[in-house]
Image 1: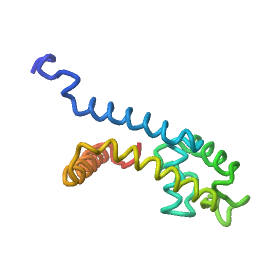
Image 2: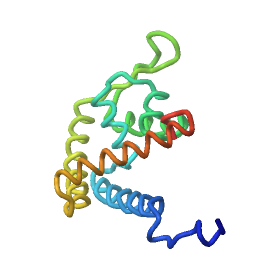
Image 3: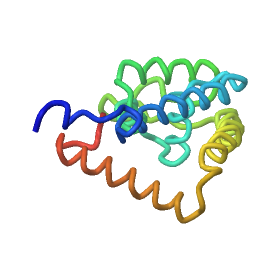
Image 4: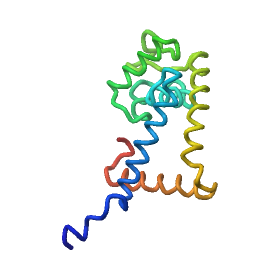
Length: 154
């Protein structure tokens, strides 16, 4: 196969379409979260903590797809604003379990509402069955790539 046979128009590439959709989604999310003074990683951190309170910074970093160093900055910023709490010293080991404060839960609720508008706009042209299929297809893609790299992490 020649190189010309392998290459296809960029607008027919699934990878390009995913990257374009991802970039536009991120931009829309940033715009929706800006009035709430949150970034996408901060929102993701609050959402993961709502679902799994008590996670350490390392666990949160893996769940939110950022480095531990970046997560430490996210956590410090959210803690300084009173949106989450961490004990001053770990109960055991080195991990500081993190939990949302009432103000953090309130900000998360507002952010979730703002982002549901973005998601509904993004999926408006799809039927409910097409939405389910898209979600399943994206999960399959992630699994295939995770299997290849040997991890589910970025």
